Image (cartoon, rainbow, N blue to C red; front, side, top):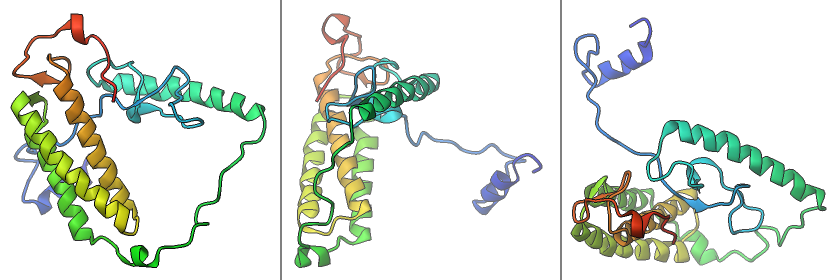
Length: 216
């Protein structure tokens, strides 16, 4: 009550008295493993776009995400990116393309906004699919089934993005769906078990074939 009053009070709202019983805990999320491919200066393949930390695939953390490695990435690669940016700016002013908003607004599309309820439902479908079929323990059957389902969801989201007003929530949904598809596709390719990827159909690690990153 003295050291964690906010947590104590919050748990009481759920009927949990943490002075008498432990807080029930279930896995909710895991750090991403992999991401945008970068070089040692944190540069991606898109000019002037840098990626650092959880979003980047530097190879520092290997096949399993560790908290201390995240710190290494944040410090070392952020420093490299900053130094490379300074060198980039020394070469002259950065020119920009056309300003955002110069194209005429499609009034029909602008008025056609996706309901927050639909976005929430689609997001929950993606989350449920990944939790059910693409958790830490996987099988080829569940992965192939999830790939078919995520492609249906991805097509639906892309259709919304092409015909409706773009909002932050819609962009996030599209990114989540795309990331889910990439994770599933990579898992199907990897015929082994390594780090946080465990496939019951291929329980052994195969260094001869798979001691490398999978890139899509």
